[in-house]
Amino acid sequence: VAASRSGEIGVIATPTTINANAYARAIHVMNPQARLYSQACPLFVPLVEEGWLDHPVTRLTAEEYLKTVLVEEVDTLVLGCTHYPLLKPLLADVAGPGVQLVDSAVTTAQATAATLERLGLLNPPAAETYYRYFVTDIPLKFQTIGERFLGRSIQQLEMVKLG
Image (tube, rainbow, N blue to C red; front, side):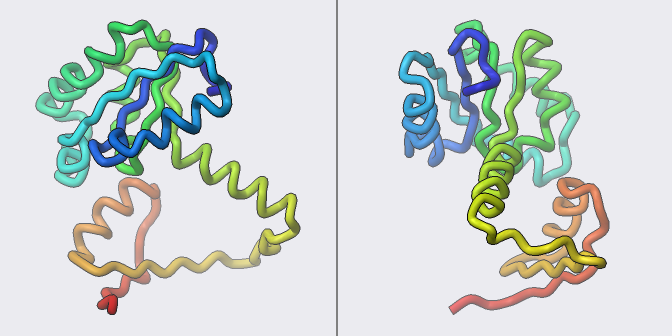
């Protein structure tokens, strides 16, 4: 909300997230005058998982999805799914220079870190950072997508069964 100069805000997310209306409620708590335009983008997740981040099919899909939001002259576009930041360069190109993209995962992580710090619950910086990843399905797929998303090698990957 702070990123918007005009209060015209677009939100793109999965159909379930859009239908839950959580972004609209949260944005209106912060700015009751904000005008929100939501668009479900169900094909983005499989396109990202396929690795088609700058594929012509992905570009055409983005142009089609964003058309309904951009016609409203939004100046801010919230990326409401953890897969969508991988499409950020393509989405920025389609949206144009007048639209600021907001990665909801980053803003959520920043707010969480600030709350943990305020409450004195942050862990002290470790001399060495250690990552372990647990998945319930298709470790290689997670590793491929995860490395692209995180920008680092995923070594400690373990498949687990829940329940």
